[in-house]
Length: 282
Image (cartoon, rainbow, N blue to C red; front, side):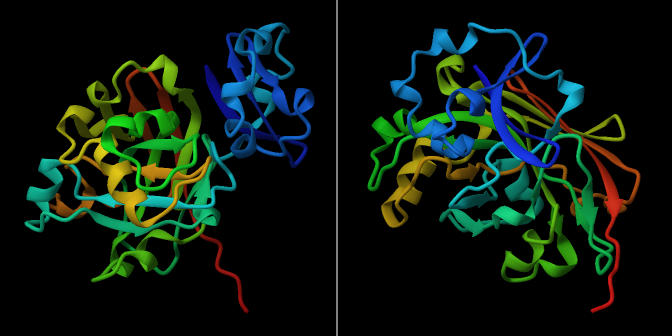
């Protein structure tokens, strides 16, 4: 099942992607105000009944929102592919973790915004894991039971503001894109066998397979949940493959008009166009 968040006339909705468009689930479950709250009860819902109607909207009628517009937490994992670790000469065995704020996100086919204070806006395609079941101290053996589904993420990095700490390089408005939808976990037998490709203006700039993660999804969930209770709708970004713009010769950074794509096998393709930030006087 493919689930998405979207807006109609600036009002937030969520629904199921089907062949001819989107079924609006918010109309059917108005007591769940967003996809985050719907996911918390997904196991109690009769899934076949969700498909007993035609689409409410065509895909070109809606504005896609980040899959989870209102996550309590977005936890990002850095240096989780060996090629990326080699690019950055990373030798520490501990997971590299940082936080992205919810309001730094945008949706499929919406603009990625290059900050006007930066000349080093970089691409990073990643697999996103969406939590569906709350937990703390989750063992690796049970970790996938807490996953609601998977999606694509463009975890844009403002490199010239990303120094010894990552917060300032990861949280400018609309520098991360999340979508176009999530595929529920029951449709992915093994999330560690997925090809992941990032394209810039149609050219492949990153390509790898989730089998090459240094730390698997269950290991990441176990590690994070040891210190941080996970809740439905929380998002874990599992790291970017090698090939980022900063480490190319010459460097390859995003500029207005560029088109980025993050395509992950069995999930979909997230597409965005880069726009320049509009500078406003205070």
